[in-house]
Image (tube, rainbow, N blue to C red; front, side, top):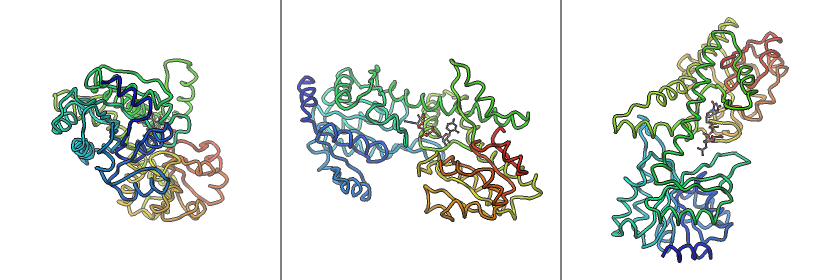
Length: 418
Ligand code: SAJ
């Protein structure tokens, strides 16, 4: 049977439904269509489906239309964390229940959303078996997404992937499927848990490394060491060092979220991830640390937060995108508001959340500017421009400005670790 499925895949006589048309599902759907698969997108948001249809991309709100005659369903829905930082699987569960209604023998079900190890076998498989089909009568695997929003070099087609199937046939057929759409290496792992763990381990690795330099930055502020030059120096080592950079916080729906999947999974078994938790604690402390630097900088100018005109530059969690999920900017703003700050907010990628819409207005007649997101537009802010606007204090939340030149103009500069 798997031979004929592989034949169907090879001939592109293989209908694929992509569930969830966000930053993961939409590029995947476009790639499937580019590779001439009869593919269709399924989403619950009218706007999302309309956007796809406006671009002549087949999409629907109707599960029957999307799934009834599909040979494969790929789940690319969000897996956020709750306020108590526990994983929220409601979208994964509801998508799987929908698939289960239309599940037929020999269908492929692939979970790409990031989940805790064990989710595919412990949550998805039982829901799919409610269809009446049993394990072995359909194919189920986890293939974690690795989309990096804004990355020009690595995209859905060329990013290497890993696959873990609930059985060997599932792994083999899903491997064959991806091999027909990707131009990238694909590694087969022994089970879904390993594949689920890969994604979280790679992102927790990044979180830990960022926490490492964030803690160093706090200490270097005490010691009068410029962490930027230390990282630059350490990066001259041609092996065994991987630079990460301190900042006013770690945002986004990957790095700031994924470690909690492992942490909450481990709590069920009584294991305590001290290291992961400490990294999250340090990174979550950075917005408050940034506010401390704002206070310090203003005090040096004989001012306090209350009564000072402060501009927040950037709301997105990372440069040159308009994604504000888990962004440290909001924690910084919340903290400053507690001190009655007179705030101007400017993010060129988030006009609706800004209260000015030009850099000129963001800088005009301000006492202090706080760089939170290193958008390319903010790299135009030269020491000369800062001086011309008679700004007294610069808080460099991403250490991108020229400290020496700014201080030479008699302007107070506070970075994160410099
Ligand atoms: N950040 C730091 N210091 C650093 C790097 C990042 O403070 O050295 C902060 C950023 O400002 C941001 C947050 O961490 O607030 C996350 O930044 P990110 O560059 O990791 O961006 P993400 O969240 O989009 O991460 C994605 C991830 N991709 C996937 O999960 C598929 C991650 O695995 C990638 O490593 C990352 O992109 C990347 O390298 O761009």
